[in-house]
Image (cartoon, rainbow, N blue to C red; front, side):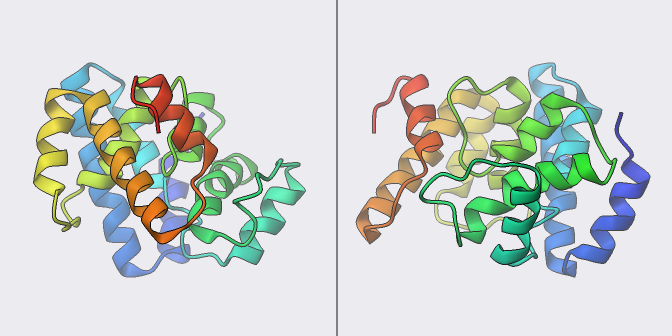
Length: 188
């Protein structure tokens, strides 16, 4: 079950105009990638639309939602809104009756870290978030090209960049990102 009409209403209330535009762009990119790879286009669109539902919430609000759901926090997550918004989003989608489809919930839950054994939909949402029309970073055209040539290659490319960037800053790397890289054949 998924309720796109209610999702759109809730997103309009919860997200800033820029974040809402980003979510629509991600949904369109996800639909395009799903079409290209033979995945469920409507599931991809819904997951792309929903992926940042908690992005504008503070870490405390996300933490409370996840604690209520019985979430097991990893050491790098508490207080880190960038890492918490994805699992919090999946929990909110389910708790609000917006979606109960495990594949969509997992695509939202892991869209910012990846994980070992990602499904096709998870890879699509992870990548669509990075290639959406509103994204402008130095290698975006490379990632956009890779997304349609080699989806695993696009995920690998981005995660290698993220790991290198976080390592250079001395920041902790989410274990799911490292496990995802290992699963894709590239160690950290």
